[in-house]
Image (tube, rainbow over all chains, first blue to last red; front, side, top):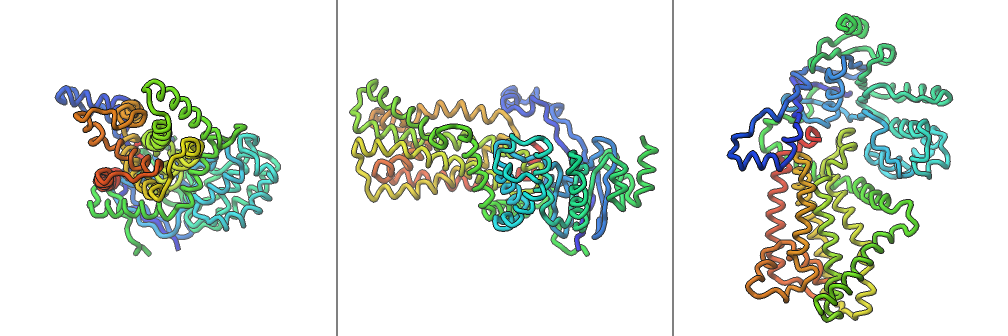
Length: 247
Length: 278
């Protein structure tokens, strides 16, 4: 039984202007006796502000909010990529972040090599990957293309590969930033059922999306975020209504 | 339901837990050797993919450098070639490993950004990956030495076996100092350029193209106090069939211990900041 509990979690982003990033500039500040140094160089953005939230087994949570409301940051905090400045995260169950499936696909490597790297990063062993390889090959319909460099693929084929690899695991806590879109009309049908099955296996789903239809289809709760705070957490329809009144 | 260990991520987290998290990162990173070995191997393969000579490009470019420089400097310095040529070749080869470790260190996390921002991995994985990649290149290059050893009849003996230990020590130091440079390089983007320009200076201050014996007695401290000269000795001497001096071994032990301490403190304090700086 997976659970996630966030206890007053805050995340600040330091935005370094170019001069603060440069060691030379810092050194010059130092040599001028610090008279020129000021905190003006550094702006801090509060991306998440005191978030307290509990998600339990069976929760299908849609994250909604305007651009920059903190949806992606919250997903990255749940994925343990950003360690919060303040607060605690209690988490039970393994986390599968699917934030951007195309990221990390190496275009010079072959499809097979990409599957290997991705698989290992997802925590599979070589043996497990080899077992899954046939299924992936069959599902992507790439066949012998798997032994050609990814740069020779069409964009549709690249997406299929990324999609197939990303969804070959059994997720417990699944984090997604926007629903995966699979363009190709012929592929869409098998992809859709595969995706539903993939999501269905998960114990908790957290999905950030701008599409109300997607949220309605996959989620049973929504978190409405605004300026890094949780504005609303509860049933889908009321959340979406609230969101619309803000727009 | 909530009785698992809280993951203590606060910046104000006690120092104790920071150090524990850092140690855990390194331990987990070592356990994931499959990943960094594969990534290092992939980096190497990508370097020579689409080329006709394949892996031997790496070796060939090194060979051209060493063979031409040997002839040129041998003439310039009026050196006794059978003695000078193997010295220079082993030196340039060792330097190629040390300088590549220095050059790549600063940008380790910058280059791994797409991994780091996508899913949680121990940060040490990326350090091991880059350091190991430099070693794979070194093993390609070492082939260049074979014709020179045969042609000039360098006496290889039991001392040569010491090279194994030398490489282990340099791998450890590569990891330690890469951690420091990588964290600095993520926070201050010009660190990479600073290091690259310093490498040129170090190259001339270290006995690589000139023999240590040419330096007058009163300037010998340039060699004695130069950690790079010591690391060069550690690697070059076994390649030429002799042990490094005991002074070198003591010096390197101290440098390693100091590096371990500094790197661990820096890593523990700034580990959690790495994704924020990217």
